[in-house]
Length: 263
Picture 1 (cartoon, one colour):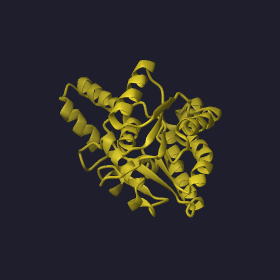
Picture 2 (cartoon, helix red, strand yellow):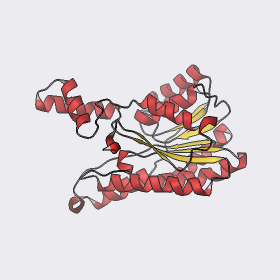
Picture 3 (cartoon, one colour):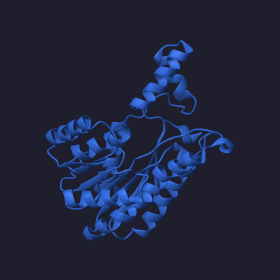
Picture 4 (cartoon, helix red, strand yellow):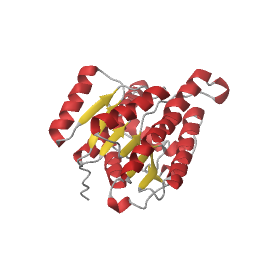
């Protein structure tokens, strides 16, 4: 499916690498102007920006806004509207992880995971919705997780945040149902990002097994399908959610998880 997003303006949080970058590139490839966000080397981020602009002929901005800080989040939305002329698409992707049993979970880590994985989406949506309503069109995509639908041990904050994000998705969808705005969640399982590849390599080294075997073992712990979702696939699905074909798809959570939550 070819989706034309020329003239649309998109914010993608946590988009300097991994899933967020895959989504940003897919939206740009469909013609959308992009506001990137995230941390990283300034030189590398400049290369990302210029590379996307040259490859896709779109405007690409960047904000270093900290998704744990509400004032900076509001500034991100304002900066995007100023640079791009408005905000039509919002992808809430920024996230962090920490694992520990509930009774040993550091309070400060709980607070930071909830702030970045859940509260930041409230703040971006709150700021972006009025801009979308002006144009009577908007697409909000929250990157949740299989852990937004099911749980795993030692991930209390992450699971709570992602479950909360699925709930927030439903509320926003109801409130914006007749404004030309949709709000949906994508719930990936294992996604092959650079961070996950490092986990696989570390497992292989620690166990003295081939990388391919370590990969199958990791996937097999949760997924019936021993195959990673790729960031670009999540990007392509995000583009679909912005298309006319998805105009009445709202308030739903879509699993790209190799059968993880079907069990």
